View 1 (cartoon, rainbow, N blue to C red):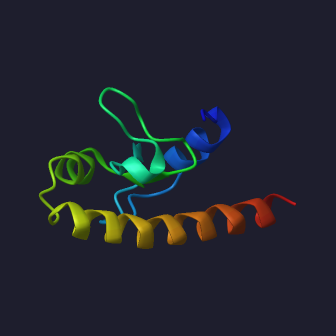
View 2: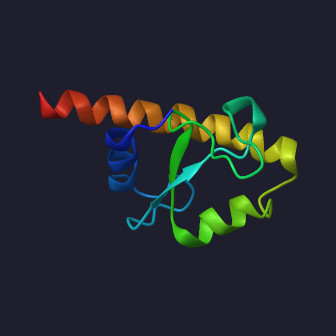
View 3: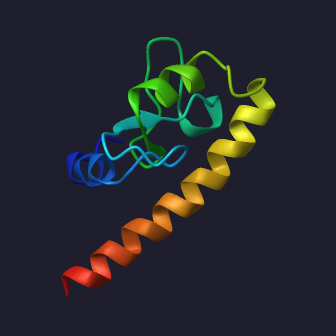
Amino acid sequence: MRDSKRLAAIRKLPCVRCGNPDSQAAHSNSAKHGKGRGIKASDAFVIPLCAICHAAFDRFELGNRAESEAVFEKWLVRVNRMLVMEDREVF
């Protein structure tokens, strides 16, 4: 699933790991989120990471695959809350 509005909103948030305001939309690396060889996970499973944290995450430098998936899940919950708060501020 692709969602350009969600991706744009994600890119406006600071890096969920280090707080850098210049973030990218980082997709999950987990097969359970639709990731496959040459296939990105659904845009529903995207978090903001700066270029340095994004590269470290994609290379599994932040932990092994299981640890990486666990921290991604925690970050995703936090990011989804941030997006809900932003939506409330707009209205």
